[in-house]
Image (cartoon, rainbow, N blue to C red):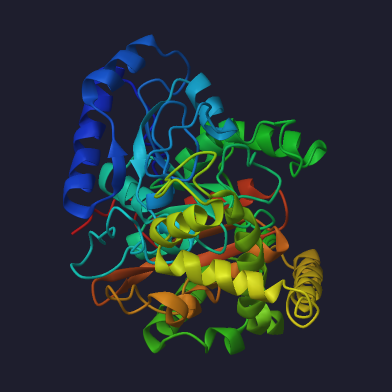
Length: 472
């Protein structure tokens, strides 16, 4: 297999960047992938002044990741005029490597959704087929990567990187919780979310993840031990093509036919085809019980809604952001929030406030926390025996616009919420097409084993999927 990487820049960085910019502009004009795409003249000046191994790379950044002097809105009216005074740590590290931020990508408002339809700036469209969603909440980043080939940053709270990767036929990696700094990621559900990476090529995942996984003392959730150093050394070798080999016969994979039965017929067929191909490659497959997945969805939504209710209390219009009316404080805040937040965000804030209110927290929130611990312990026991858990990324193909809005769409997160509840890394790789629309296969692995996930993606390129496949 040829070693492929978008970032093997041998030509003039300005020329490479301009070609990328033109494709990103198309992704915005046709598919509404950006909330803000910067002017080329401004970008060119920054490229000329930049230094580092990634000089010439234009980086689309999800609009809930802070970028200094570049508007960051979370795709919400309430932050439509907010310009951060600082960069997120992940953005800062990539800038130091020579990267230039090309713009902010469209998303579900405050990352609360899985279709990229709830944005104040309008929905993101799926390039593979008119009328269908690209997944969410990081749909804009996924579409930008698909159309341009350049990697991008998203965030993943319950599948918001892996699900749009599945729906757009690219790679989407959610890192171990505590590997990548959350400093500058605008909070939705702190205990679950991580900045993640989209790419067409596995080596690009390694290159970006290497730079953004540097230790940041400002983030108290970051893990500081030898596992980070080992992983970063491995990522460095992978990114240069030195260490890409993986011997499948040494690795075991667990899956559950019982859980796979919860997905649509066409997804099941593609999944079992993939299982057969993995076994032909030499992996050892084991059909086991993954019963904890059946309670993952309600556990996840209770926790996220409570944390969202707490985090979004800060948006009152007084300190920053939209202020609709000046006068009585309570009236001003009420009007500002009513007009500034969309329906899905308001639904989760109100539900979260109820679930955590006095007299109810023991019935719902505390039980959810106990279930989360049980799920985490269950996953750890399985991964102590097996190297990977494999399940479909989503239970169905991409829905049409309007089909998955609100609670009726929560089922699409069925398979992706588990790694967020447990903190494990996970990757979605393309698995195939259903009626012209892509779906993905998800690998979950042990904490701080992102290098193995990237090697699996490299090994399966050309066998389970084709990274050179063009949209349309």
